[in-house]
Image (cartoon, rainbow, N blue to C red; front, side, top):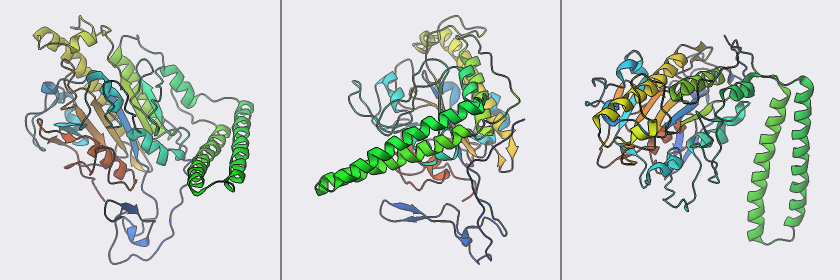
Length: 440
């Protein structure tokens, strides 16, 4: 049981007489390569007498460093009448809550494990890493929509600090891998005195930014047009930072949500699936309490021998199976449980309802990897499962496995479903074909 705290400050629009025709809540004005969102209009009521905004949209990604065996994941048939594969059989009860996608990848992205940096940005960075990365889809969402919650995003891992999350300047955001530390961050409160001290520290930082801002404005009088434009860009950055600092000050003064859960006792560090399941349970609590709406969880490809019956070799060693039957059998036991934990997460979200409805319907849950074939370090034909989020599911979207479909089109679908008026993201130039919202 949780006590959800709504800090978004949303207010319902006034009632208007129902017009003869209605507009979709996400109606966009479109021009040549441009989309502009409309403000709320009376014609956008979802039904007669509707007065509340739609529920907030959330995004969760689970990225797997060593991929999944396509032969055990992808069904042989496309469409809605597919026969479940080995990995999807245990998810039969939530079949209508997810879509499996085959034949997709990021155009131009290669170089095996190095492509981990590109899985959520869709930006090729090359083998040397000399090319600059760009913002990841989770951080794009956090940048534009993350201000409504205490934490704009959470970047997590089952071990280490590597993550697929990148800022708009192309810097990787280190992940948090301690379940106990994550629980404390989310739910263990500081004393009121310490909260006030933290707010004072943030306020002091804001006053420093004010001084810098005023000094720069005085300088502007002596600059040419080009430099003034650069300063305008700088001012915009300053204003954005001030807004974030103001939000931090507000949250620093507020107590954290209360949950009926004890701090977790982490499983053995070699238990990848156990660590995954524990992190997913904490992620559910974070979403339930509206502590954040955007979360990434990375499952790196270490070589520990997992405590799974029938598994006798290290995980990374098994991923380089070379089509050896024994290695393939052991690897399947591991991957079956990884996909099973994803299914459990879908069930847990579907089982939680609040005043806005089903939490799974509000949350797009992606599982994917930078590797379509870990044994050969192939970055094509990536494993993709996407659940929830208000999309029509229960299908296998089978694209061309020789000429892959841009995976970033899925990111465009998620962004638009979240209410962001964008028609493209990196190599994604449209929404994903066949992945349609349940309602406009």
